[in-house]
Image (cartoon, rainbow, N blue to C red; front, side, top):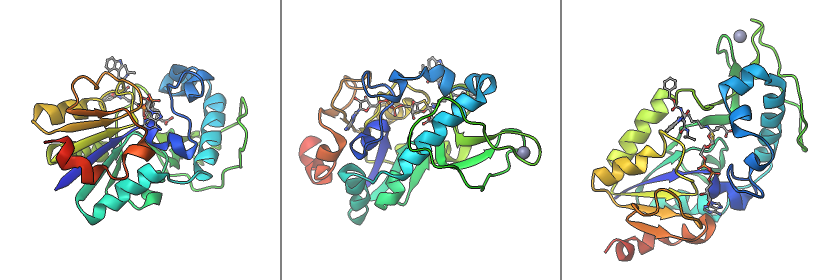
Length: 237
Ligand code: BJW
Ligand code: ZN
């Protein structure tokens, strides 16, 4: 059996990583996402964007995978598992998942904005968010940016193609912890449903996918994912 997981920020919430759109605790509650997470925002205020990403990088380094990430990794003993993630953390890999496709890049890689060269220098620790920090400069004079995908930027072609294949070849798609509003990622469950592949949504809140999903589990990732593989036959009967 092939299981394809599409994950979003909610799968890492129980590890202590704030989601984007939670009204009270979400990262977006304190900053304007379109300013901080768009190429226009970067062009206008690179020092503000850099400070925010340095802090998130530091935070993501210091958290641990939770029972949701660990369950998905453990499924590999029983099924062929592919993980399509919108998250820029590395918690799926750290939990042991092998086939992980990062649709929105990684906050553990940095590159020059001008020439694309990878940056491998040291980054300062940033345990608390600050308003402004100057990004390092590449020898070519360009600024160093995180290797993530901002609004208006294209997704990495290879990760996208592998994700489409993983969804197309899946026997079941499990969509966990995403608000299902950011495209093209939100189109992947639609593709599965159009192919007749069952889609299981794991999310404590309703999303635009909820009505169309084959099964919706209103539970958190860390409570629903352990044991979900064993429940599949009953859920899809
Ligand atoms: C739990 C839980 C628990 C809580 N357990 N669950 C109009 C229509 C359609 C599309 C567009 C449009 N206008 C513009 C667009 C395109 C745009 C888009 O989709 N915009 C929409 C917002 C309208 N998309 C793009 O621009 C994309 N690029 C593109 O389209 O390129 C075209 C192109 C082609 C060729 C050349 C040039 C361009 C790029 C999108 C990039 C998104 N980037 C970000 C930032 C990444 C870096 C970073 O991390 O900082 O990605 S934005 C942000 O949203 C981040 C996330 O990956 C993404 C999705 O968020 P996610 O993961 O769903 O998180 P939340 O917070 O929204 O939801 C959390 C969920 O978890 C909630 O539902 C909770 O209930 C739940 N939850 N606790 C389980 N314990
Ligand atoms: Zn450069």
